[in-house]
Length: 297
Image 1: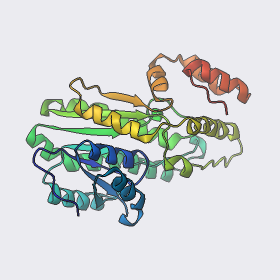
Image 2: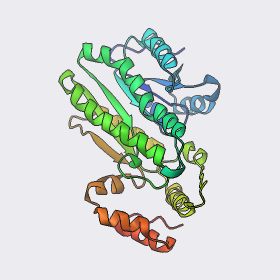
Image 3: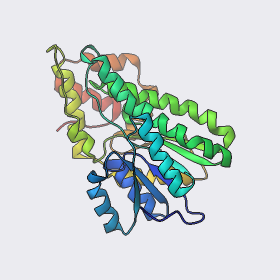
């Protein structure tokens, strides 16, 4: 167990701290003076996090909490409050991918992805808000995705969950404004993360959508070749919770800013035309013309 937070030291909970953005954010925030509590599903899988924290000369307190389970979240946050007495900042990072076109996506896949990516965040938010409201301060940082702004091809369950979290976050920002609690939405593009190595499903059970899955992997293949260090996301999160000029949304990482910024300016006809292109080379060229992102490999 880590030491209790020092007086005046911000207490920050980062969910899904074992890898990728969560691990980098935990270490970065600890390095700038936060008392960081990282939630993990298993302490046994935290070796790399602990090693990286040791190398950085910082400590990340760990608590077991599975965001997909009500009882686990309740027990985890009871332990967090028992150790720290409060939570100043919550970073909802824990998430899973989910590949499928709509026709081939079973309802239980929608539900399982939504349970982690949306309900997991709301479980944690509900756990910390009463004490934030009582103090009249705090921040909630929800990590969505560029796929929370653009309907990423052949990732219907993932897109649905991230669009839902965007909507909940937008409403939450107004709900909490009277209480002095800040809400920030972080919209990463492609970062260096184990989630992409795990997210390799391409069901194609109907044999009708081979091109869709191929183009989805084309995008991520190009992204991984140019992937942003997840510590950049950690720095953006630090800025979002400390700046005197807060915004609601913060696009970041490869492809994030370009695609998020263009969402509301893309003509529907261009979007449909992109989907209708039969030749992959034409698709790659048109994608670059619309978004300014080269996805060629």
